[in-house]
Amino acid sequence: MRPISVLVIVVAVVIAITVVYYVRRWQLKEQYSILWLGLAALMVVTAALPNLVEWFAARLDVIYAPSVLFFLALSFVAVMLFHYSLEISRLSDQNRDLAQEVGLLRAHIEESSAKRDG
Amino acid sequence: MVARTSDVLVVVPVHNEASSIADVLRELRALTPSYDVVVVNDGSTDTTAEVARANGIQVIDLCFNVGIGGAVQTGFKYALERGYQIVVQLDGDGQHLAEEIGTLIEPVRSGHCEMSIGSRFLPGSAEYDGSAVRRFATKALSVFCGALSGQQITDATSGFRAYGARALRYLASYYPADYPEPEAIVLLSRRNLPICEVPVRMRLRQGGQSSIRGARTLYYMTKVTLSLLLAAFKEGPTRQIT
View (cartoon, helix red, strand yellow):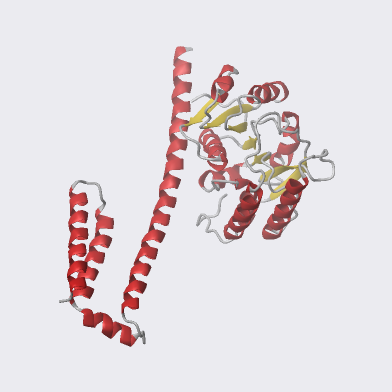
């Protein structure tokens, strides 16, 4: 096995361990852990079976086989980023709704206590 | 819950308007005493909320700044909870005149439209002396808004508006976050909720500064144009708002 393959596998294992570590500490949602574990698995597969990448590149008529890896990696990053944009939009909507709800409730409470005292 | 004393609620969204809010509220009290008023304090860092409370006005405090859209929408939700039939949106910076509220409400009250916009650019509106760039920007946006909503719009960015019950029910759930005024026109027209404009006079700002100035105008124009185009395609509620 080529040194680069060993390196990729080591990095993949580190990613997997990190993910499991944070899930155990309740700091990473399982939903995201699946994505990252999937990435780690994919890295191991491509490192262990370099012929797979060559075969895939040939299918796609790609001359320089590793560029297939770059393409896949960039696609992965793009999908992740878009997913985060969606998530941020959802969270900011919820955040706004919460601020409104808290404001309305506070107004409510102020009114009722003013009525009670008055 | 405090009982409504009117079926009209005036919503005053404010963000750091301590210098103008007292006058605005005094004018409302003097000129439209029969309407209920609520101030939505959008995370002000000055004494705006205290001044409003000292004037005996109900204040809704948002715990951080959510932007003008979110602030106005809070007013819609408040109105909906309490069964108001008409909501008037009037800025806290003193631009909008309380004495014009009657004119603004009239077409909503008569069922002629669901959103009535106080326009600075109709025949009968008083002279408006904003900068040339601003005038042009407002005009261009209005034409664009008009094209998307299939009717003539002269003042798409005016935040002096009255809303009927159906528009309220829709906007309480769907209201754009920033620069909502032009987008609301397109959204409502897509839901077949009629819109009209009435000529009003406005004052120059008493305090504060427009959030849109200088190089931001270009950014604002681009962003609004894009969101208007997208608004035309946005999904609405699956059932008709009645």
